[in-house]
Picture 1 (cartoon, rainbow, N blue to C red):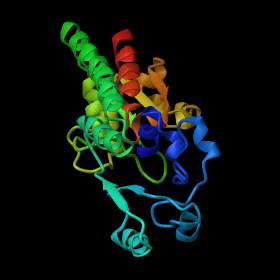
Picture 2 (picture 1 turned 180 degrees about the vertical axis):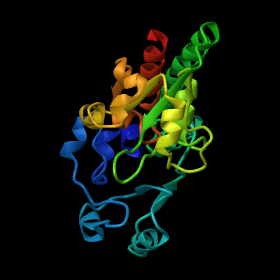
Picture 3 (picture 1 turned 120 degrees about the horizontal axis):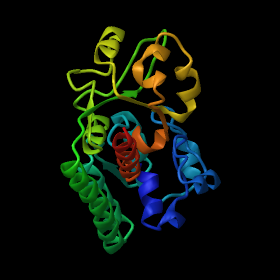
Picture 4 (picture 1 turned 135 degrees about the vertical axis):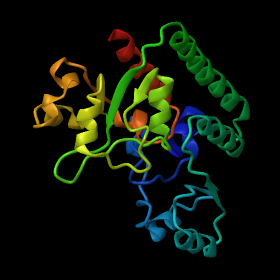
Length: 240
């Protein structure tokens, strides 16, 4: 998400290294990767000679201390779990990369899109139930609980999350079929298999063609592309 926002703020030339998980926009393919959350390649990172390291607060204390001992300044940005957190992160990163005015402009654009959707929801409230498939199959079924940003995405799009009663990410198959959601959203890479896998292919939404493939990067992390997810879900809900 930090990488996405640095690109959004037209400061990608400052990036000398990114995590293995940073794959958007496509231009990230040209930037050197320095590992993941727990397997950060400190030697590789040092070879890039960065002036500053930006990380999410989810990175462990031990990793941060290793970096700080090497004399490189570290700024940890809070891991957000609400859409409004996007605006806080953009403001913070805008200040760090010296693009505060551009950050304010991007926030204004995103907020206008949200306001437009909220206004449309007020004019045509449908209360359609929505199931976002986080995981499925033999390993168990998972969806977004009320405490997640994905729940908020669904609500802002004008839907009702079938996982709103959950305290964790696990959902029973019985509850899925009891709720029998009006619309189902799933990552593009899982769409084909889910649609033909029993018993999920018996859900009304699958049979009616109300199973929608969505870009995972739009929804799985808190980033400006969450607005794309909200707009897409809203259009799908409006069509039903």
